[in-house]
Length: 204
Image 1 (tube, rainbow, N blue to C red):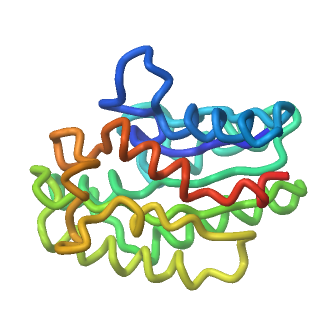
Image 2 (cartoon, one colour; image 1 turned 135 degrees about the vertical axis):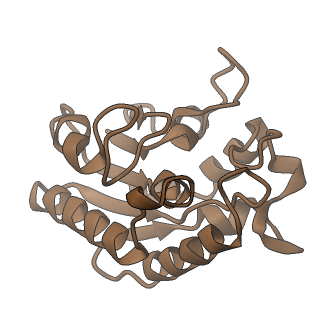
Image 3 (tube, one colour; image 1 turned 120 degrees about the vertical axis):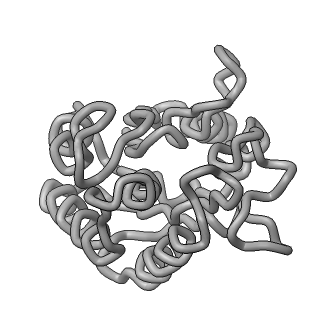
């Protein structure tokens, strides 16, 4: 049982409605096609979610036990959360958080999961240039956080969602072919690229 833990990008905002095109759906499709029919993918994404503050649903630290650790049979988790913490800090400076604080939240969650024998995979944060609350200052923080994620040696692996969805000509923005139109959320093709970035061998 693989739990995809995150925000609206995991929840699948702007994917085709009722089309099963969110990245967890497309990951599940890949697993079934690869002969892993007994591997299930649970979508634990909540639109607007953050690691450190309640806004849409309880914050990531507050719901991690319920939504990951207590899922029956859970063996793996893919954590992709943090862009809303950074964006919210730009929109409301009193709610600003640092990449170090987000790294600490991810580390604490990962340790809890690993203590229960759950394999942990961290996803890099996708680009969002062009979205109202994603100026260059937010992207700079995102890049710092992604560098920390890529160099993390304490988790079981890293999935570089940023690398497979960004515009090669401008790493701060989504590839135009993957942009749903709001510059923050991928479209169906972008969610497919995310699903294809995951090495299925790590989920056995």
